[in-house]
Structures are given as structure tokens and as C-alpha cells.
Image 1 (cartoon, rainbow, N blue to C red):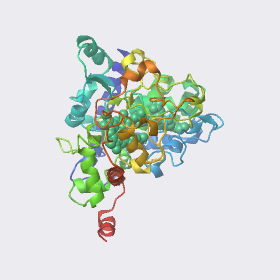
Image 2: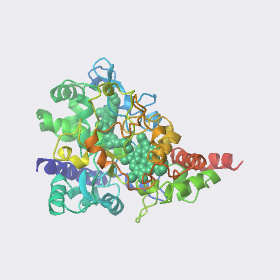
Image 3: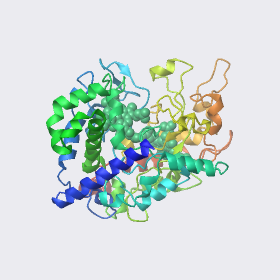
Image 4: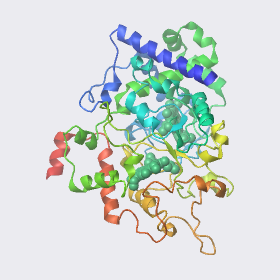
Length: 459
Ligand code: HEC
Ligand code: HEC
């Protein structure tokens, strides 16, 4: 129950804030920035809470090292993902402690629903019914995602345990272990290989000292006497920043202009889009949704669902030097709750957005791939030519699914195309078709200028 209460509280706070904002004429509606037709270019002024969030986001003094802020890993100059090519970033008190997972971009996170286990594509429906739930205070009152907490999910699991197709969906991080941007913020601050404060009390002391005045001005004097409330409000401020600041969800890629009828795809890009959609070829769009939704919102290139794809182990992650160590996604090491104890969730990771994917340096939760060609080849050759994807042992045996303990390998998706083939089958995509899909993926990078770039492409 406490989780749901906290969730509701923060939603109510958000609703109250938006309404208060409207009253003083500061309401900005980032939801509009996702509309298929307009409103994607204007940045409304940030609310006072979001301005505080912005300061926090860039403040290295909130780290144990004094040198690392959220922006160090989530670099605004690279669509809020790391600018360097490391598989995992270095953090900690002396900036020498390697992380265990690739850093996701923070762009396009605000319509992520809470974590739940439900019928397949419920998340798609939720996203379609009320996209940008977090963004619009008014929509909150009847937002379906607001009541989709872990308890509801458990009830569903019990009532319907025999039914297949119950899939985990939503939540923050690769394993969905927290529900919202608000709740997420403390974790990097106390993670020993990220901002590495000793504990929440240390963060609280720093916040009181550096931001005490602003926090009491915005949230009332009593807040500062309560460690949990103070930390929860700064989570709220950081979330507000990520919601209100347009550069977290600009929808200015060539593909967005194409969907608005203001850009034309090249032949290769158009072929790539077709292969991306084709259920017998790439089938990518079945998980990385690419259509304008029923109520006119631009696609986020994820259905927010979790899948076990069986990506190869990445020896570049120092934790992997221990042969007994595995990153089992929902089953930990970082998640520890009812869901992490359920065997059918082991090895599952959240489907990431593909927006700005061509600007990422490493791909998948473990950063094992460095080019989009290699990622796409993985999907089509994992089953037809596993010897090209996985390492071999001393005897020459291919170690298929080498990054997941044997007892969880049954969770790996072998049903959805293109991962439903057998050794010896023809891969679903040829190398030229892979190149076309990659050409299409490159149209997902924000900052396209239809006037300038359109003319260039026509030449
Ligand atoms: C040392 C690098 C580093 C720093 C600093 C850092 N993060 Fe992250 N961030 C990560 C990694 C790695 C993940 C993925 C972790 C996981 O899935 O377990 C992540 C995930 C996230 C997510 C979830 C995104 C998603 O796709 O689900 C959010 C939101 C986020 N970080 C916000 C922040 C904020 C806010 C700060 C500052 C308070 C911050 N991060 C500081 C590395 C960092
Ligand atoms: C069954 C659902 C599903 C299908 C189909 C699918 N993906 Fe994915 N995609 C995922 C999941 C889940 C991940 C994350 C896996 C992980 O990290 O272990 C992912 C990750 C990716 C990434 C890495 C993104 C990043 O930020 O690291 C790329 C690129 C990608 N997919 C492209 C494609 C392409 C291209 C296709 C079609 C050929 C495709 N996907 C088909 C579910 C899917």
C-alpha cells in the first residue's frame, strides 16, 4: 500500500501544481509538444519548481566526488545520454567505479507508465488513451496508469495465473524497478558507482544547506524538517524539469516531419521503414511502436514492455569478469521485490525508445553492440547463425545465450519474428535490407531542419 499512496500523493501534487500554474498564467502544456501537427517548437518558461530541478540536474556538488551531476551521464548535448563510448560509465567518490548497465537516454521518458504486469499491449493502450500522463495535471484525474500499481498487477496475476501473455511493462530503469521520474531521482545520488553519496541523510544535509531557502519557499517551511519529504520534493523538481523542458521530448526528427507531411524519406529510408514495419521481415515496429496513436500523439518507439532477447555477454563490463555474475534484468541484481523473485521475469529488460538511437555509442542494457548494423544483425542471425553472434568454448561449441543462466533461457523470446527461425533458415533480413533499416533509424534523430536538410537531401 505505501507505494500506491506515495504514487497517488505525487500525482496529486502534480495535479495541484499544474492547476496552480494555470491560475497564475504559467501553465505550459508539454503534452502539446507531442501532437502530430503543431506545438513542437515553443519552449514555455519553466515553472519555479522545474527551475529548481534544472539546477539540481547540473549540480556536481550533489555527488560524493563533487564532480558528477546527472548531466555528466545524461549529457544534454547528446540527447541526455553519455557523450563517450564506454559500455558502462565510471562514478563513485573518485570517479573510478564502473557501473553495470549502459546509460539510457532521458529523452522521451515522461509517458512511461508505472510498472505493472498485465495483458500484452495494455501499455500501448494506456499510452494511447492518456499519453503524457505525467505532463498534464488535468488528465491525471482519470488517467488509467495512475491506478495501475503493483497491487493491481498482483491481483491480475493471481486471478489469471494460467493465462499466458501477461507481460511486465512500464517503470523506470532497464528493470522497471521504480515507477516514476519522481521516485527515481534518489537512486543515482546514493548509488556507489554513480553519484555515490554515503546515504539519503547525506543527500538531505546537502540539499538543506544549498537549496534550503528555495525548498521552503516552494514547498513550505515544514518540508525541510522531514528528510523523506525533502528528498521526495527534489525528486518532484527533477521530474518537473524533465517534463517541462522541451529538449527532453522535442519530436523534431526527420521522421516526425515526415509524419507531419513536411519531409520526404529517401528511397533507402522508405525501404527501411517498410522492413521495420513488415511482420515477416524486421517486425521491429511490433515492439518499437512507430505510428501516430489514435488520439494524435507522436510514437515513442517503445511499447514499454519487457522482453528477454538473449543479448551476448559483454566482456567490457568489469562485473562480468566473475563468471558467476549475471545481470538478470527484473530478477536483479538491482531489483528486489515480488517480481524479482518470479522466475518468468528473469532476463527481461525494458524495450527502449529508438528515438535518437543513431547518436548512441553503445546498444542494449549491457552495451554489447557499437553499431546499429550489428544490433539489427543480432535480431536476424541469433537463431539462424548463432555462431556469428555468440562466442565458442574450447571445444568449439557455440555458447548461445551466454549472458543468462541456463535455468532462465526458456524466457528468451523465440516467438516474435525475426527471432523465430531455426539454424540453417535464411535470416529475415539481408545485409542490404539491414542497411536500409539503419538508414531509417537515422531519421529518428532530433534537430532535423526541414528547410535546410530537406534541400540537402533532394540534391
Ligand atoms: C554515473 C552515471 C549516471 C549518473 C551520474 C546519473 N545516472 Fe541516471 N542512469 C544511469 C544508468 C546506468 C541508468 C540505467 C540503470 C538501470 O537501468 O539500472 C540510468 C537511468 C536513469 C533513468 C531511467 C531511464 C529509463 O530509461 O528508464 C532516469 C530517469 C535517470 N537515470 C535520471 C537521472 C537523474 C535525475 C540523475 C541525477 C540525479 C542521474 N540519472 C544521474 C547512469 C547515471
Ligand atoms: C519482441 C520485441 C522487440 C522486437 C521485435 C525488436 N526489438 Fe529492439 N529491443 C527490444 C528490447 C527488449 C530491447 C532491449 C534489450 C536489452 O537491452 O537486452 C531492444 C533494444 C533495441 C536497440 C538498442 C537500443 C538502445 O538504446 O540500446 C535497438 C537499436 C533496437 N532494439 C532495434 C530494433 C530493430 C531494428 C528491430 C527489428 C529488426 C527490433 N529492435 C525488434 C525489443 C524488441
